[in-house]
Image 1 (spheres, helix red, strand yellow):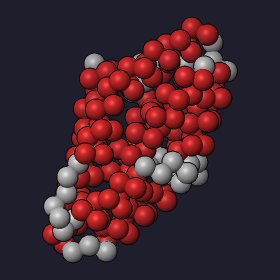
Image 2 (cartoon, helix red, strand yellow):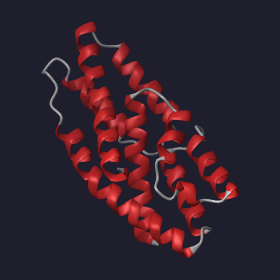
Image 3 (cartoon, rainbow, N blue to C red):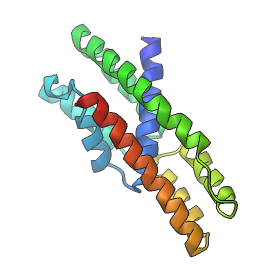
Image 4 (tube, rainbow, N blue to C red):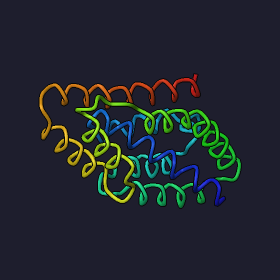
Length: 170
């Protein structure tokens, strides 16, 4: 189960990064969570609890991962196994994205801004709302040309995340 908690933490982090790239929270996170193959198998109570965690914008990424881990432990053993299998597939698929984000190259003019955004996106001890605010502040402090480059980076993250998720669920 400890390995699964690690999977949950990484999934939450990457999902939060992707959602931050679209500058959105709550409902979009809910829709991402609904894509999990085990979602239709949840009973009404479990589904409500699962979505409540996904939509709680007051939770940091670390707290969300912890809440999901607690929630998983309360699920039937068969469902836990399915969740773990899905988590492993998702982690393997998203390793590429994590590496690509780290390796992403900005123009020399945008590099310092891009590094600030990467640092914000890697913080797991802030809420998605706070992350969005900080990223927005970095972008707003840049010139229009750099703002455009930073926006392309954020949309690229979101697109790549969605592509990786769809590879798994289809």
